[in-house]
Length: 259
Image 1 (cartoon, rainbow, N blue to C red):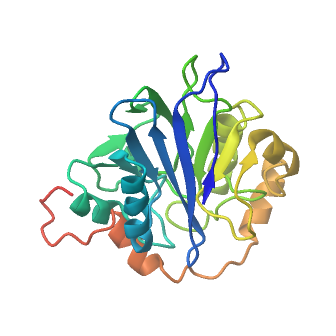
Image 2: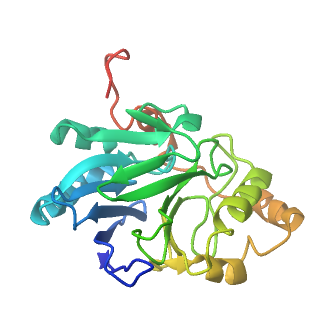
Image 3: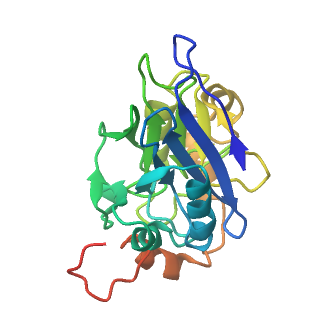
C-alpha cells in the first residue's frame, strides 16, 4: 500500500491523503484520495475491485474519512468493479463513469467535468482507445491543488506500455491520439497512476513515459502495427466482468432501479 505527501504551488501542504492498493488476481490498482484538511474529510475511490471492497472500506473507516464517490476509469474486462457493492454498504456514495462508456452510474461524466472532494478536485479527460469510454482523472491545476499533478490513466497508459485495443470498441489510432493529446500534454513531472501493472511497478511520470514507453514513443503507424500483432489471449473474465460492470458491478434484477 503506497502513500505520498503533496504540496501546493506555494509549498504548503495540500491536504491530499493518498493511498495505492493492489488486487493481485487481476493486478489492479485501486486509489484512495481524500481532502484530509477538510472538516468532513471527503474521499473517493478510483477503480475499486469487488474482491477487495471490505479491505478498502476498513481503511477508510480507520482513517476517519467520508467516502462520497466511487469512480471507474472505464468498463473493465478483467475484474468486476466494486462500485455497486460499495453503494450497498455505504449510503450516499455516488458511482461515477463516463457517459461515453454507456455504463450505468449516478454520475455520467463528460470531458472537462470536475469532481470535487472537499477543496480538491479531479478533472475528467477523455482518453478512448482501449475502450470507447475510457477517461483519465487528473488532479486539479490551481494554487491550492496538489503538486505534482497526478493522472489516473486506467488502461489507456500503463507503465512502459498501454492497454490492448482489440475489443470493446478499441482503436489503436484513437488510443495513440488520446495519450499524446490528453496525457503527454500534462507537465512532465505529473505522476502516472495506472489501473494495472504486471511487473511490480507502482508509479511513473509523464516525462518518463514520453521517453521510455516501448509502444507510445513510436510513430503512429509503428504503434498501430505493434498493437495489431500482440496476439493476446481472450480475457478470461470478460464474459462475466463486462456485463456486470455495465451496471457498476451489480447484476441488477430490476433494470429500472437505480444503482
